[in-house]
Image (cartoon, rainbow, N blue to C red; front, side, top):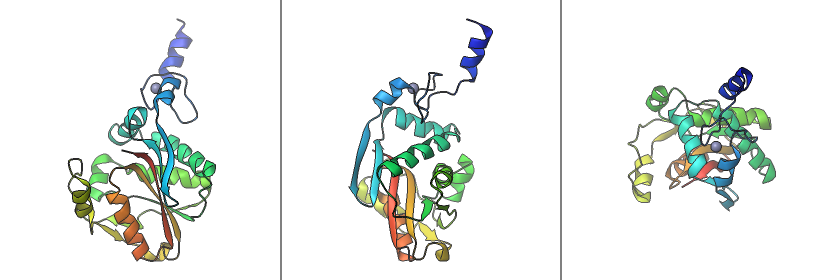
Amino acid sequence: MSINKILNLLWRERCMGCAYPFPLNRYGFCRECEGRIISLESHIDAEHFHIFKYDGPVKDAIHRLKYNRKKYYGKRFALLLNDFIINNKIDNFDVIVPVPLHWKKEFSRGFNQCAIISFYLSKLLKKRYVAGVVIKSKNTPSQTAMGKKERAENVKGSFTVKKECLIRGRKILLIDDVYTSGATTEEVKKVLLRSGAERVIVLTIART
Ligand SMILES: [Zn+2]
């Protein structure tokens, strides 16, 4: 193998699913991973959309974004959401809001993955992105081992709207990475509506 070929392989962007330097599709997945992704392409109603099943390459990619600091994956996920929004004609919103993390969690991770995705998505869609409009004011325990009811109890009252004027009368697209019981997104949605938002559409990359 020539030096150029080796260098090419070393510098080639890696697949978000398997981390190998295979040729990638538009969203950063290799052909094999693309074939293993389970697309849900369904929604509960006109206000809840989930794109993939939280499994395989999508699960690995979200994990790498969050815990291996692969922040640039945020840009690829934004492109994916952008195409989903266009293909599904989801256009009844004017502001993009990410599900927030508690500041301690954001500080230890170094970033909020949903905020990165939302920021790039707003650029692609030419819609307004507002950060800090809703914050997680209570640092709740991890929900991993909790059931649906416990999760809802756990997040109750843990979000606060900070800049009401930015959301009053607005139609919001709320972005989250993973939808498990829906406790978190439903709680954020509730506080946004209570603070005067006209409607809140929930869009998540993956659903468990
Ligand atoms: Zn792959």
